[in-house]
Amino acid sequence: MIKDDNMMKLNKKQIWIFGDYRNYFQNRVTLQLLAKSKELSKQLDAEVCAVVMGHNTREYIDEYIAHGADIIYSFEHADLSVYNVEKFVTLTVGLVQKYQPEIFLIGGTSFGHEFAPRVAKRLQTGLTADCIELSINEDNILVQTAPAFGGNLLAEIITPEHRPQMATIRPGIFQELPHDYERQGKVITLDMPSDLPKDRIRWIRSEREPQTEQSLEKAAVVVCGGRGMQSKKKFKKLFDLARLLRGEVGATRPVVYSRWAEPETLVGQAGKQVGPQILFSFGISGAIQHTAAITDAKFIIAINKNSNATIMKMADVAIVSDANQVCSALIKAFKNRIRE
Ligand SMILES: Cc1cc2nc3c(=O)[nH]c(=O)nc-3n(C[C@H](O)[C@H](O)[C@H](O)COP(=O)(O)OP(=O)(O)OC[C@H]3O[C@@H](n4cnc5c(N)ncnc54)[C@H](O)[C@@H]3O)c2cc1C
Image 1 (cartoon, rainbow, N blue to C red):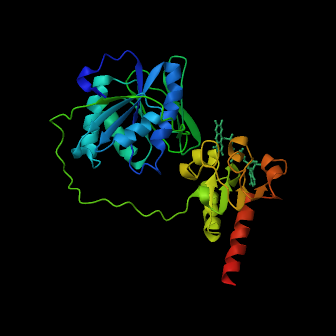
Image 2: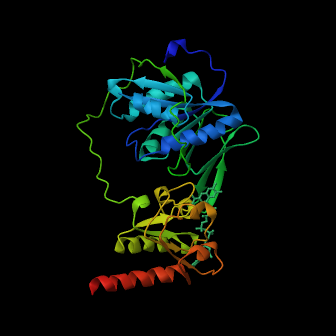
Image 3: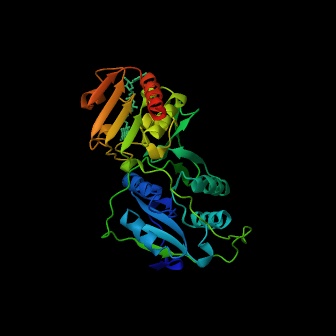
């Protein structure tokens, strides 16, 4: 552990991640960002750093190091045990001004959407919201890819002049690295400034909403939909079908990029692995990045208007038809069944 004042002058660029450890076991976006930053850092010859604020955070610090962080900037204080946007933003802005990271990434969660724009505004830098891809270009600038114009276009956005280059990233897009408890990292403990904003909100208690939905990975029935569903409105029908079958909805990447479904529904290499008793595949071509995650499904029913689509060859039942029509027909049939 190193005290802030003893910190040597930085001689490497740094990529920072904000460590949002609340609901740690479900919310994995910080770990996903650490993994992606590790990849980007090779091209930039940069260090990957996580900012951790709170009380009793040591276990999260160890997790972040095990998942790829080289350095942790840690504010550890009882006053930070409850998330408070004003305090967290003030501390973060001061830290960024002092250490001047090259890149600063934040999970695109409700927390990130509240926190990141405030930090960016105070630092007078840019912010790209809800990125789905990140890369480094030939000028060593971060290329931030995000859906634009209702998801019909992908925009590549750069911040050539201002620093840090800031982005929020959708959860579920990148894959976290496996734990490596042998990894060593540096923890820099920071002193709390005396002029932090006073609490304007009185915190009484917090309660997490009960998780009502079963998880996609464990569902016995999965209703997967792809680009062949053609629109968000039509895709919604899959939720009706899944509800009737007490199943869960899964989606392909184009569906998630078009915002027809939430990133948590992504099935595939960059998303979830499923192994249901029955898997419906509506309007999905069967790209390896998707099918690699459905190989444990016991019975696959694929609906595609193209009989040569790859998914049709791996299906137990292949229906050559319009996906929307089949979905509507199944909903009607199951509803009738329930009424009988
Ligand atoms: C690094 C990397 C990671 C990736 N990770 C993932 C991942 O985790 N998950 C994932 O899904 N993808 C992932 N992809 C993307 C993947 O390669 C495919 O592009 C994607 O799976 C295709 O989705 P799709 O089948 O919905 O769309 P498409 O490939 O466009 O297929 C649409 C299908 O719908 C059919 N169709 C069209 N209209 C109708 C209709 N009216 N009725 C019936 N059928 C119709 C078409 O015949 C076609 O077969 C990844 C790609 C890369 C490069």
